[in-house]
Image (cartoon, rainbow, N blue to C red; front, side):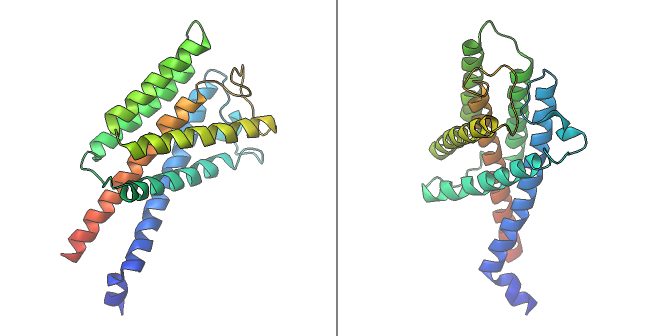
Length: 212
């Protein structure tokens, strides 16, 4: 019975999705805490400042929401790749993923630390850095389209949350948020997408080893 269950492709796929989902959720929570720390250093509130402190009733939901979003994005990327005929490529290696994460954190660090003469110049610089991230570590049509879609949706949702007073930004210049926020969401989509792809490749290779 155990052998039959292990060989069942449906059960194997479910286990694979659960494993990848757990990893992506933890990565999303970790990124949420790191990004908050970088923003708080310059009094730019991406999340309420006490999220790193006592997880008060007003902020406990932030890391789980980011973790859930990471699960959705990380599982969606490899699925869309297959649907569009862009199979998982060998370019997605762990070393590449680590570098992508480092650049993503660097972009967020720049959004908190760099000073420019005006916000437009700053936003254009971050946009160029985000496109550079996609070009270096992705270059797929699906990756660009999904990251752009994620950036638009996430920015709209953030605008609504800030409008409703759930949290706020200091010195907003793009309605209720900062104009560079879509760039951060875009680069985040590329990064989580690459992690999701690499996890899918790893699971696929592991299944082949077990079946051989």
